[in-house]
Image (cartoon, rainbow over all chains, first blue to last red; front, side, top):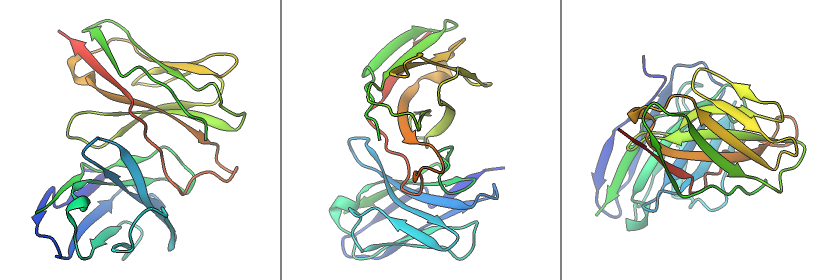
Length: 113
Length: 115
């Protein structure tokens, strides 16, 4: 069974479009995250979400918004996509807030043309 | 959080122990050392973490020097599947205001296991 899953695995879209990436974890964890890995392979935190509390990395544009329908899901919505949004996006989860033992999904490669 | 320094790349022969160093000379008393790896085209994978005692699990061993300024991740019998980028991360311990803002990954060490 996949612990943290993401869909889609690949996403190709045009500038200006709005898209969503879904994430689900079946580990019963309380906290979920979104990370972005750019073309230089640097991996940076975008959001963490715990019990309806959202912590946002201040560098993330407000075009990005995470939405959590329940504790097992944290979806990422991106409005008005730009070329610079092209990257691999990873979802992760951890047993509780402040746990750095995190479990990552397989990633979604987003290409904006 | 303390900054970490790792060699950009290392080679190791298959079947031998792979020893990956990490320098964290500015680490403070309430900071843990975490190790992750990222195999090509996959998400990062948690390996192990420790505060000051040596730790061992089914994947690896973590040796932290007595002054805590450096550590070594040991993969006891490296296989080709261990080829990956290994990240050493220092983070504030739980209950000390850490967490919630996620992990900060540096450039890591690209470990290549040679057949």
